[in-house]
Amino acid sequence: MGEARTAPLGGALTDVDGASATGAAVALVGVTAGYRRRVALEDVTLAIPRGAMVAVVGPNGSGKSTLLKLLLGLLAPWAGAVTVLGQAPRAARAHLGYVPQVEAGDWRFPATVAEVVMMGRHRRIGLFRRPGQADHDAVAAALEQVGMADRAGDQVGELSGGQQQRVFLARALVQEPELLLLDEPLAGVDALTEQDVYALLRGLRDRGITIVFTTHDLSTVAEHFDLALFVNRRVVAFGPPSDVITEAHLREAYGPRMALVKIGDRFFGVDVGHHHA
Amino acid sequence: MPELDRVLLEPFQFAFMQRALGATVIVGVLCAVVGAFVVTKGLGFIGDGVAHASLLGVAVAYTLGQNIYLGAAITAVATALSINFLSQRARLSMDTAIGVIFAFAFSLGVVIMSRVRNYTVDLFSFVFGNVLGVGVDDLVLIGAAGLLVVGLIGLLYKELFFVAFDPVMAEASGLPVARLQYLLLALLGVTVVVAMKAIGIVLVVAMLITPAATATLLTRRFHQIMLVGAGLSAVASVLGLYLSFYANVASGGAIVLMSTAIFLVVLVSTELSARRARPA
Image 1 (cartoon, rainbow over the protein chains, first blue to last red):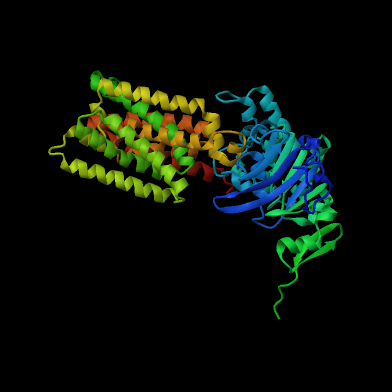
Image 2 (image 1 turned 45 degrees about the vertical axis):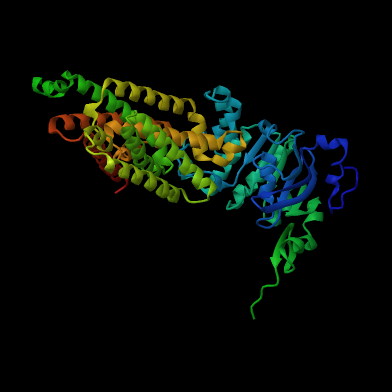
């Protein structure tokens, strides 16, 4: 295990082989994983330090969601080891918060906002038992935090996409997580919600909560995140966003036609090879 | 109104009518509670398929002189579980898996029944329902099975609710999602069998759907759909029983007709009140 790893990674990885890897929020060593016969992630080694706010970027099918599934213990790696908060992923579940893609919910199912948020407390409440006052208080506080306190009794099916995403976020908050995993939480969300979500996440990060956030929106990464992880089946780059979101990495992941355009503080990947005369 | 009293009370001087009353109310409540999942998760076709498939168990048990409920229960639960297994493992759609399995089991049941020389009222009653023929042992069985199903749903309500809304997150928080889904389908199978004697194989699906569907017109809270549906279902069962007694018609059909009548009344009145609430 002692040899230096050759992947083009930022400083965050340097601890992987050392004792301090156990202090990392997330550590993967030589992880390969996939579905049936398709490899989704190959030989991934990385360590995410505690308290960091990390964006996981990459094209569709690049293995972003697979990475989250590994961390949640929903998928076992074919090879390598995954450590979450110093434990096996399943053992760490009590300390995880998870915001799945909004499509994960059956929004036609009759459930109120408060009932859905309460689902985040189920693990704490335990089997066969009913929620207590502390659970109801936690739900109310989380709804307050995401600005949905006045919608507690409403049917979730009546909410907009952005509001549904806030409900999922509130559900992750009542889990009182040390590590918060979010899968494309801003897909289809309006700009106002986006700003609110980032402000909320920064607040959590400042309280020491580690945040891992998948997105294919490169434009906001430099602005909001401490670290960026660029995956495309393998780790393309990992480090400060300015080192990771580069034209070279973009071309490696998306193909040679991509160029990086900077508008204000934001970076956009642009397909420059697709002109019709 | 002594005349009305006579009409309402007279049927229940008979022990068989008292048993029938107990059986229909238990079955009605049970079907509505399970029906809340059937209606909100679109499990109607699997309910119907499982009910039809249980004819195989009825036919086999009858031919071998075994307990018909036991035969039906084994087939119903086995069908429900194999449909779920097939749709997950063979990556067939749920509808396709249901179609293949229920058609197989039902036709095998029909083939076996057609070999039985003179199948009696007893066998006929499972297909079309005959609650007036419920014996004490039937009633005990219906009560015990009903208690089991409602009890399990009550105990696991929080978990079943979570899985119904968001299975991905449920699994991520450590719930045994696949096992809970199998359990719900097994409970559906047991419910279908319990309801067979009262409603009949062919009409069970109506009792799974109509009372719960009526409840969804009145409330959007899941536990209230269960409670309101159970109440409506019990009322329909009692009304159907009167109809069956006085008009001398099949109990299963009579109960389902009453349930549909309640559905229509609720549908029309909720539509009217919604229209009235709208600004002119």
